[in-house]
Amino acid sequence: MSDSYGSQLPVPAGRRVVIRDFIVFQIKLAADGLKDVIAINLSVIAIVIDLLAGRGSHPRFFYGVVRLSARFEGWLDLHRLRGIPSNDDRDALSRLEAPDADELIAQFEGLVQRKTSEMRARPEDPWDSPG
Image (tube, rainbow, N blue to C red):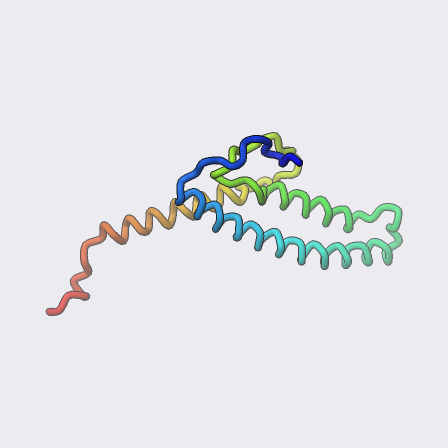
């Protein structure tokens, strides 16, 4: 049985990369699970609306939910992590017109690192010292 990454697994990675990938994967799994719960409920509501509105042969709302769910999966790209070489052969139509989850996580990491550096470089507050 072969996976989609072929012989590229396991990839040697440093401890920081592995821990970061673990945390990112957990966040992505939670987002994917939330998406599934929302998609289940929306699809039920959409098919009921489509059937009640007489669009049984053209269920516009139901297929809209399916397309939205597929686009979110393309955006989330659950299995793309730093420790695994990326495979950029994804369907461009399945991606949302927004930064994907990995780009947002990288931006968040950069923000945290900048703020941490600023806090370390900031001189001691004169109000905190005993006077």
